Image (cartoon, rainbow, N blue to C red; front, top):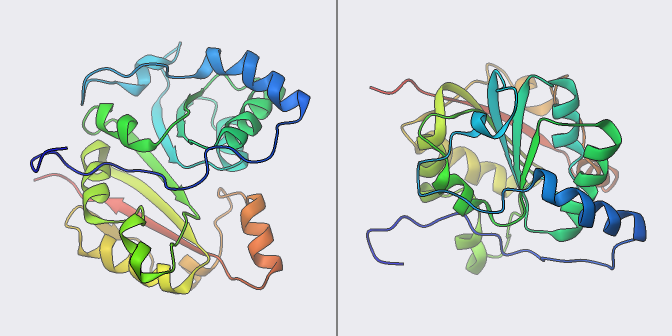
Amino acid sequence: MNAAEPRRIRSYGRRRGRKLRPARQAALDSGLASVSLDALPADGALDPRGLFVPAPRAAWLEIGFGGGEHLAWQAASNRDVGILGAEPFVNGVASLLAQVARQDLRNVRVWPDDAGALLAALADASIERAFLLFPDPWPKARHHKRRIVNPANLDALARILADGAEFRVATDDPAYLGWILAHVLDHPAFVWTARDPSDWRSRPADWPPTRYEEKASQSGRKPYFLSFRRRPRP
């Protein structure tokens, strides 16, 4: 990567966990081909609405969808929206594919790898809503450079988000909460929509819980729900 090339989103997590159960492996083997983005066009050339027939009213993106519960819920509740998901963890991809098959979700497309290449390929202002839910906080100071919320990645999101688009972020780590707010609010493209503490301490009705969130709550970790808007371009 040369000095002029922007740093892209990269996942430092595991690529594979425990061996998949037969049903999950079958879902992965049979389902990925029908929803996977196997190849990406040149940077900035991908119109996400063109991935679906008929074309959806909007295109949304979830970065690091984990087990896919949130993405599947959004797809089932908004079948007129095309939803893209990026996730390098094979077990999470298999979990989502099982939900896609069970609910006949035809408005889902999957990039089974780091989100960086997908974000680079997407056209300007082509995404109306983006989700980043419970990313790894990388709590050790020497690992802070691995945090997905950073100026370069916010630049990439600002480019692909349409004017007025919503960017939803969740975390259960108070230190990372401060980091997220500091970095996003320092970026000229984003504005925080919260009016009072209840706006970010309570999960909105159209924001379903994930297994990770439920485990965090059971362990006494309080989740925070942040919503930002993409400012209109000059």
